[in-house]
Length: 318
Ligand SMILES: O=C(O)CCC(=O)C(=O)O
Ligand SMILES: [Fe+2]
Image (cartoon, rainbow, N blue to C red; front, side, top):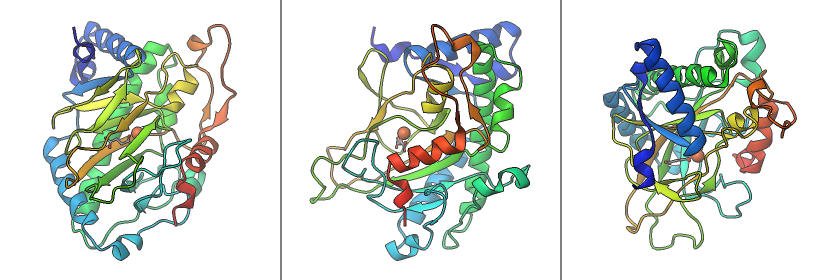
């Protein structure tokens, strides 16, 4: 059987509203999916496909604006975690070629404990040229935030951590939506550059709504690149470096990439949601994952994010 057919497709509502047995089944399959394949497909979740479709329309409208207009929204502080990042800035860690993409980051709008976290959670920027952008993107943020919190509730059960372990770290978490535009490659596409070179995400987990066209591939645990197709009702959930660190690589980070299309004239849009803990979180090894010894030193989540932002060139976002 083809490997992709075994990747679990899970119903989030079976975890939220199901019997104890349903919750245990969901949790076991989630854990197995992330551990054995690196990702799962999620259905019956709170991210409304009509909202996603509207968000894609608005994101498209923004990226059509003149370059000079878009550049007014470059956030000079904080390593490009809000507002616009121009084409050719970000590159995969250890890759000398920048990815063929531009993107926009939306962060947490309302902070429960500003005295503690405001300094590391910069204000969002909003493009005044695109009516409804703010409203729609914040609704999408809420849906993704709720979804990733529930996924981590379930993962917490699998990892045998105290009940609010992940909820406490996600409160005022530094999660972001990244709305990405991959322009047509054109006749002069730089040789060796790809839409997104192979990489792992920095965060705990990533939730992805279906992109507007193919190209995303995930490296499964057997070392095979699997093209990921996701319809407009599905989300793909995969694991990032922070989850790998705190689970002592019991759940390794999922390597993925976006390959170039054959056709040099097409655009591609995608909107991953990177789930981050709050900036004060200490990323320490979960006791049930210690095994023969801890592979990583504890590190503060904000310090780790800043270090990784340098690795991918986002500190040069000006
Ligand atoms: O565009 C995609 O489908 C994935 C993008 C991605 O992996 C990233 O920006 O980290
Ligand atoms: Fe990624």
